[in-house]
Length: 145
Image 1 (cartoon, rainbow, N blue to C red):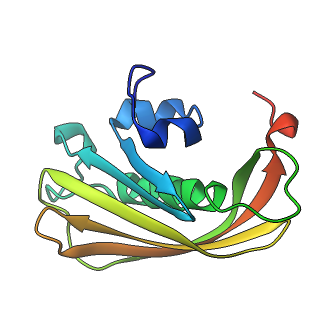
Image 2: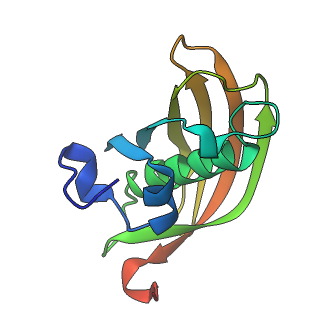
């Protein structure tokens, strides 16, 4: 996603150079839910011609993190970021379509933790991978670059 990308999801976007490198785009992010999309290219594939598992896990992780940041908590006094504590991923089908979509939702959030779920599907809606993750909430002012 480039800095010139505009839309409602842009206000929630945190700079993640690796996502830019992959060509992933955050296309929706509100009310504890997020959606990202990307076009697969040859350099995203594994030996078998399917999307590399690391690409899918990156999209699942990032989209869940964005869903977590899009769900406020009554004690939040400043904008929050999150860091991944743990993530479980199940690969169900090989990703062979060019377009993949990842949808995530924040299932529960406390002042310090967010629990999220996500799935990635191909253009026909076939579920390729599912994930769940736990994220630690960190005030944006404490995030160092």
